[in-house]
Amino acid sequence: MFHRLLLVASALVIALVAAEIVLPLVPPHLGTMQRIVHHVDKSGNYYLKPGAEVPFSGMFESISPAVMWQVNRQGFRAAADAGPPSDRFRISTYGDSETFGWSVALDDTFQRRMESLDPAVEVLNFGIPGYNAENVADRVEATLSTYSPDMLLYLVNKNDVDLPNDISDAVLSSDLLLRLRFFYQVALSKPWRQTMRRSPERLAFLAAQIDRIERYAQQRRVPVMFAFMKGYTWEGAAEQAQPGGFVAKVRDARATAGGNDDAARIVIVDDDLRAFPRIDDHLPREAHAVLAQRLCTAISGAAGEACVPARWSAARRETVPRIASGSAGALLAERASLSGREAK
Image 1 (tube, helix red, strand yellow):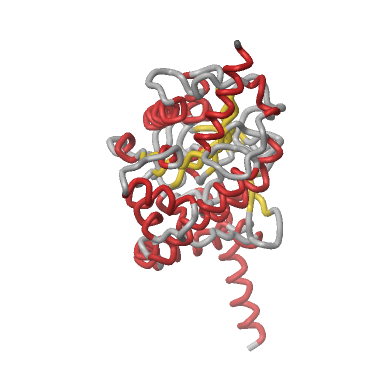
Image 2 (image 1 turned 60 degrees about the vertical axis):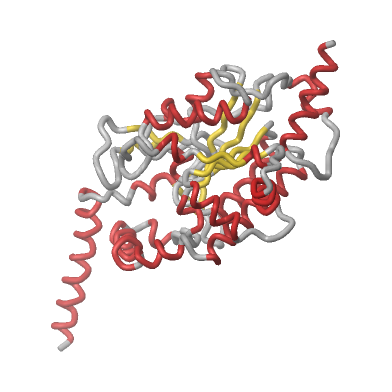
């Protein structure tokens, strides 16, 4: 009996070892996440690995040629570290894998495209694959003061309402466990997740996190823009918003056709992106180029290649009076006003 159990145990160990060797060679290539992220605390949250360089040829389908996922020493996607704010208009972008630029090379991300359109803008990429809205809010609070942007941009994806994508160290260390988890998410729980994304509870969750991000940024005098990849995600969040919050204020302003600076900070971009087929279930490089132009127009308020708000100047960046309340539009207007007076 003992020898039989030993034989069974040995066969199981051999099978598991063989699986860990063979599975990384078979799509989907989930092990890529092992090389790009690491845990930062006991909460299950994860960040990008500082200094990582991961060649990526697709997880669900082939990307050819392969793209390089580069992470700078500060832990966000870039070829080099960011210095202190300069005379360029600095935008910090947040979100999930679409913000990160899953299927495209670094120079083809919408952030780098925005910089190509307007050399006067600097766009930092704090996107992390798998993040939901709460993860994004945590990331904003962890980085905003450090990098002192002139604007915060959150690219809101439809799956940002999902439950946190907590990946334990044990799961990250095993391709087999990653696949079992993936099978559960895609095959077993997908119908439930699709329904959940339209549920009042999860849409209320999204609205609350947007309110949280706006409130935190406002306290630090940083204007915020929210770009929704799906119009129905915005509509659902607006319907479930708590009274008195940012989302509710924008909803009420639009309902009365009054409009205000806050309403201008909600941008719906799905019409701009709908025509592009996805690569590995993500935006291709052509869509990133269109998204860059759309965002630049929304931020600058003018068509063309400008990505910087009119009359903005870094000269008065540190002397803008602290404002306890007020819209991002008002803050930008105040900065423009100060810059205009200085130029006279």
